[in-house]
Image (cartoon, rainbow, N blue to C red; front, side):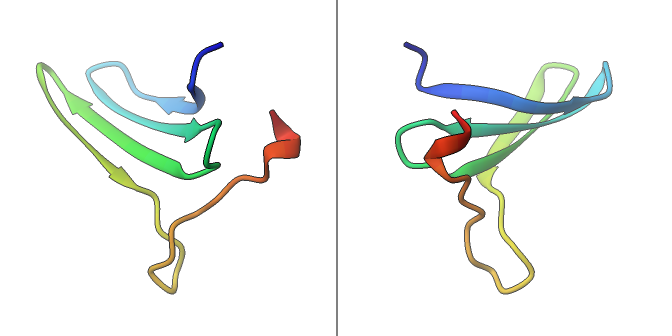
Length: 57
């Protein structure tokens, strides 16, 4: 079983994706532009990590 699941994607060269860790439910924002990129936890308006409930997997 894969630990991470891509739940959202937009773009082709300038790509934004949201990945969910299926063990913890934490959402991550991944951004790639050409051959550069980064990954960070997705935060809500209060600065708290967005967590997806495990029932959705």
